[in-house]
Image (tube, rainbow, N blue to C red):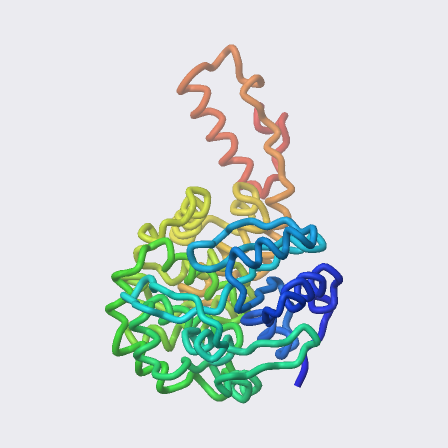
Length: 375
């Protein structure tokens, strides 16, 4: 079997592979680019595995005229910019020691050792520069069946890095066969070791949840997380019941999806902007402002998310005509400015008057004009 695509045949990529192979090193595409190409999914990142050390890769790539960035040299990875495209080139590795968060690795020249330290069989697939698939662990049938399976013993893989618990559900959300369901051995291992999530940094947990919730339909994966005890370990106090409703209503953004899960989102180390938007959604869901007012105050996109989150949490359909109301509100411009009330009003009195007029204007369906409000 072979993979193909523009990502594989672009001249810079092939020239980089040639530079390694002419020096008698292997150059094998690995991981997401091979997986996605075989599934017919977009390929975004190009990863190459090689028996060349980072020093060898750097020397050969620079001699070929490519720029090299030591992005992860402590882990055997350098990024080579070839043909304006970044390629992460990593030396074959084997684990020496693991502690549930980070691994101590040694370089290897054996592709089987490199494959054995990967998380899932669908990520342990390689391809030669001509596209020929190399499958050292027999993971191709799992990929073609969209079956997310741990490499080797699931509990061993999890003990090496507890983040793999969250990755298991994330990969199922993105690539798994929802009809066949989640792989039972992996699910049981995650349920047995979810306490290990507490040892992970909250930034890593937050990043995984973000990627999971960005999947087209993460509902089944999140429900399985809840049943296994994983969701509570990752997001204390959360409740998955509203998520499938929100997804069904058409909300595709990960942040509103996180909002309806509830729980201790503050611990996820989101950016200030993300936390502000998350809190706003949750506050407005409870405030019960009209769709039109939400559109006026927050714009059409955020107003839509608030209405859908409210509907999902209340398990009720959105109000009739809500989309037109949001559109009307988002276009409305309050006709009164502070200068219209000055100098007669100043300070608190001015603010109170403006808020009162704005309230009357909103309640009128944005119909009252400047003269009517000042009269």
